[in-house]
Length: 380
Ligand code: FEO
Image 1: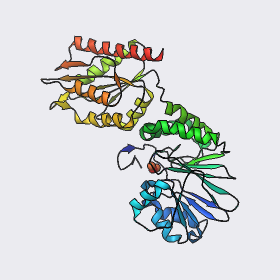
Image 2: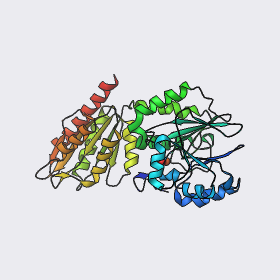
Image 3: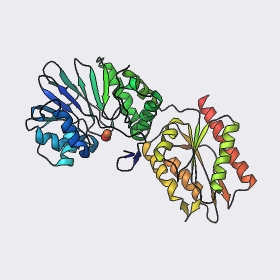
Image 4: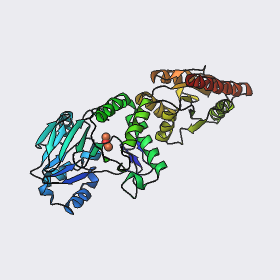
């Protein structure tokens, strides 16, 4: 797959849907897969047990990438109890409209599988109200559903077997694009988990590879990401019709570089939105440009502005720029979007009529230097 959430999220390295079958005196299945892969999952289960022997199905989260296989599993496992969080029953019923034998659990509730137990930890808003983790005692495996996951289809299964750069890039992209708005809850939930002092031999999310080598490394990295302490860098996002706003963007970059502040620059009409957002997540400043079209913005710049508002990035500063012909509202509109996104505008926006003159480009370089100074001021 190259897209997820319909076409909302790019997944350049594919993904995986991880479901975990536990064979003890009782047999439990933790999570399922997206519906089109349900037959494949059932075939995999049949290689190990007769699905009719499954006693317990755990649905940690109702989003269809994990619950899509439930109808097939519940049909073939007629004696299974379906364990959900308290909020999960509502969302699973809302998706499937089936009278399955639900058992709603809360944090600390346990279910014995024989030699081991499943212990449940509710994790609301990581990233849905229903989200939950399941911990397998004895084996020390934390099945964390979306948390600590990555959209990363690797040839191998475990973190020590894959390219670390790819792995961490995909884990970061996942965090930045999905979990950022819930960062405060991430920090609290991690504190709560660490306080339980559970032995953790593996963290097994529902996407991507399983963390078995120093599994808590991703937990500590999440603590860093959730703190949203930015790097001393900037991202320039722009669209352009006839290259005027592009030339302004590049002049702003010159201003940043003259102050030795690194930046990345994205022409949003031809760039991946989620990749750009991952860079914005890391950076201190986001500088946005668009020409004025029909008294507004170029429509191709609007989606990422909507994401900046929705993802609720913290500790960001910004500025706006753009060329125009006769009305020239784009800069004010962008500044309004930045303010709505709690991004502090730290430099006066630059507007250039028609194609930018040298003095307009110099104003852009000055804007770059002003943003660089604000970045350095915040860092000092
Ligand atoms: Fe929230 Fe992987 O689903």
